[in-house]
Length: 150
Image (cartoon, one colour):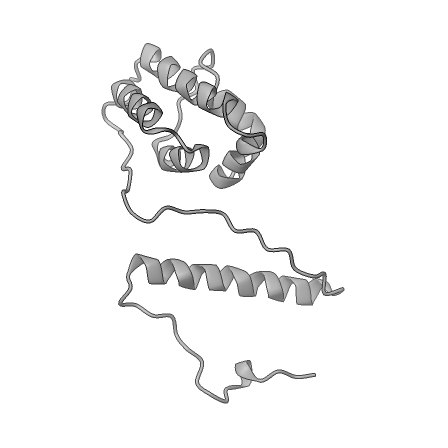
């Protein structure tokens, strides 16, 4: 069972961090967690007893850019609140969001194909970062997928 005092403490720290960050941080956090902004309001409000799932902690720390002191206080309170499910915080490559503005190709099918192309590219980059010995399959020179049809 979670310690309600410690839950309120780490949620209060998150609330303060969000308050002191630029506008749009809540929305970026919601997108990173795959939720709506209302979820962020719930998990950042100490009066709500809804705990923050451990799987979200790393993304919260990353997106909100906790200072070292804020990070230490948050993780200490989180560990007290949830002693059996402390999050595994990775120390490694930091992530950043990259948004691309691409032209509308005036076709639902072409737009979908372009979206899938970028999604596949992102997955291949993630695979390379995960294990630099593994390489995504490469197309052989002259394959049909490499030809551009006009």
